[in-house]
Image 1: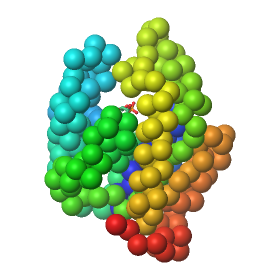
Image 2: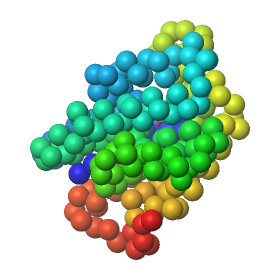
Image 3: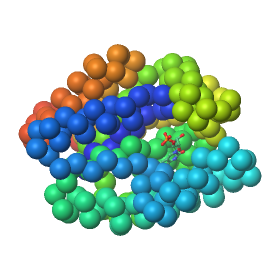
Image 4: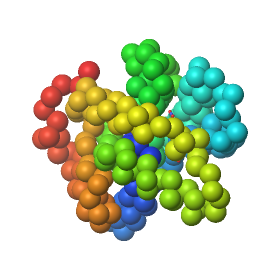
Length: 221
Ligand code: TMP
């Protein structure tokens, strides 16, 4: 099974991811945690370029194609082999991030991005996508203070430095995507305390593993 976690900055998805991994492994499942950008060897080089605060001269289309290159490499060298080996693969961000950030956020055409994504993922669409949703001002506040603690520096990352308006647009983009792809998406209220967010995420994944698709009556398109 292939699961993706999506959400704006500071939605807490990376902490939830580790708790979910622990739960799945304790219940006997083999899990591979990965992320975008940077889930493969080449991807780690691309991640440096993409997230470097110095990359101010990166043009919109270049940024897009670097994310897509990262994805194509990630799918063929990491995700597909692990899914084929029977593991549960969970990726912290994937194709929907491109539509939310480069599409809704930066103003590129979401439909065109979907076609580009189709090439990059080459059939490897997620079975399940959890959207960790919360107001942009809450997420951004968390992300900026985390960056300053972890990196022990007084600057924000390249995306955290974007305006609140940008992050609001990205959030709205994600909610639009979740409404369009109701069969694949589940929305988790990420403004709850971490334990409650983890419990919701585990319940959704367990339901999917048990083959319970009862919430997904609407057609996917
Ligand atoms: P993160 O993994 O630390 O959340 O940082 C990744 C950043 O890259 C985040 O701000 C979202 C952004 N991003 C895109 O803009 N497009 C993409 O396709 C992906 C995967 C990430």
